[in-house]
Image 1 (tube, rainbow, N blue to C red):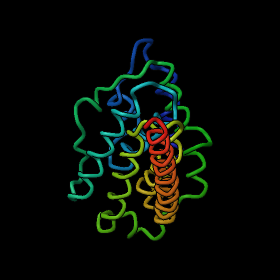
Image 2: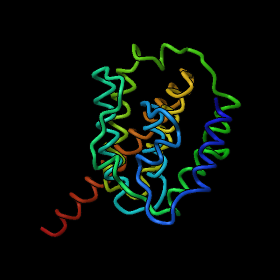
Image 3: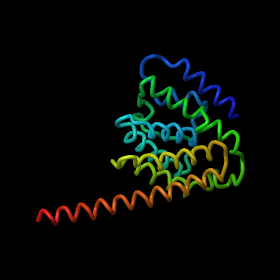
Image 4: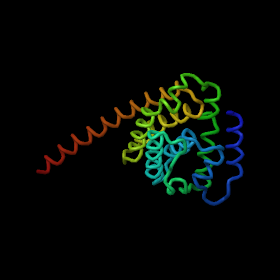
Length: 201
């Protein structure tokens, strides 16, 4: 499974057109676009310095979380997300990151079907809630605030793809860490902002 996905991603990256590439095209490179696939595709670009991408894809991941919460088998994503276009350069970067040692290649060595109930439809309520919260953090304008949430979403996505409950649990743990750090940053910003306003008065 892993070798075929990696090979397909590399072949797609090598044959991308010179113009811009839509997220739908990137999804087709994986084969069936299930929840885990879409989550990976939307999380990886959030690690890249592409203006505006995090906002659109963050909202797309919120829609994906809602679909999972409702038990929908297919990802009901907004058209704006599916039609979001990346330049050929950034599209190749996304496919390369997924096919390289940073994602599927490593997952193929370590990921396996275990604690699968945590990665199944029956155990996705908490997962959907975590995905929604991480997606909201991605949308927020916090410098470098996308990194931990995007990594957490990638782990959860890999867990869903490989039916690996351990990867899902690791993703949820990283999501909890991202929540704590984000809350701390927001608290500091509020305290400093209040002190600054009081100083002006």
